[in-house]
Length: 223
Picture 1 (cartoon, rainbow, N blue to C red):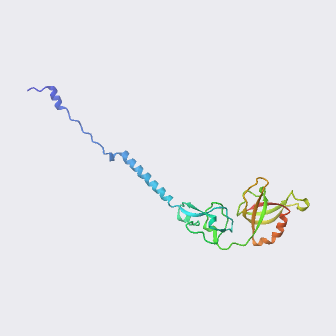
Picture 2 (cartoon, one colour):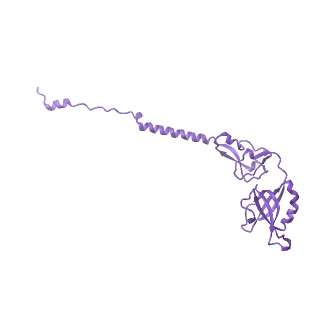
Picture 3 (cartoon, rainbow, N blue to C red):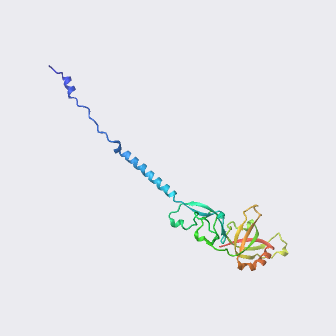
């Protein structure tokens, strides 16, 4: 029997080659993607861990003066994340109640964290508090509770000339501001300023008050 040439060519055709498929787990792109996801998860856990490390410390609710007695209502809790425990230990912890009889050894501004070094236990020094009525533009804008000021009296144009001395006079020096009324009334208004005298300054109070009634009070902030 004769076999045609076309039949022979069909028998000699090679079978389809089978391609080797790379496993999806060996795909470099997939490996890199998994590594990036793991890295992001690790970074997120680290950041969350740091957030959990915040500790509660006491901060001032308002301005507090040097020598002022501090009570719980003067403070507010703040959550702060410190670099290490040594930094956190420098401040008064809010996890503990405010000790009785706590005194400030220096003035603190509103919102300031309370350092341990700025407080002490004991009785405040006795002082005499003197209220002063001062024109708004005679109080420096930098003066606040805890500031130290000199109290001057200058001639007041509104008083009779015979009752006014010709020169300005220093009536109280280096006194602490313990209370300062908020600004109000605009230009030309007055503010009440309360200053505290140390025991050694009490002897000058009678002459100072007499001189204040003869003029206008001007405050000068001192270092």
